Length: 204
Image (tube, rainbow, N blue to C red; front, side):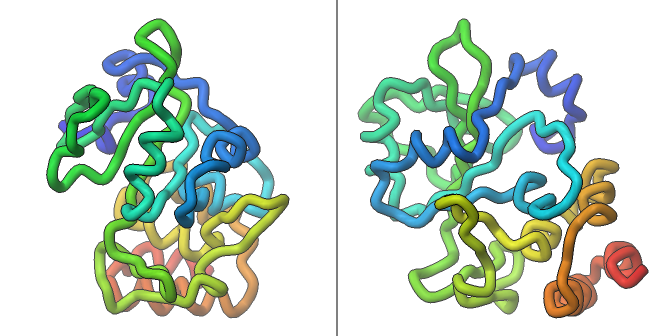
């Protein structure tokens, strides 16, 4: 069973507890990384909406920033989350080919603090949806900056959530503050990708 298939309780029983950094703490942690990064997941989907409890924080980093991030995070323990398994990424070791995600904690006695995801497909000009390269937007349309922190726009964050379709994802969709253009874009992309149930929910 893959990590993403586990509910929150099962995940923590198997891999350990989470005490996620907030977006402001992520900003401080990644301040020295000279590559584009942003907050995704439920925190981005809920911008401007009623908050909910988040069991982790999803930060996405352009893959070109990996080496700089590893230098900045030298005193953290980095673990590859890849193909449903966790493996320590020791100093000097290369990232396993195909790995797109790291979990961070201070040491084995401490909780996990950050889920760091690598964007392998976007470029300097455009955000590109990793599941279908037909879906792309200029960065000015894909993200927004609030309090010095870049977030995916809610409609873009929700597009990622449609595939998992967990109760919390549907709750994020129901609560999201989408303007007319954002909702229209989300519905069009859900239709394009065949997420018909979510398209119907977004229209409601």
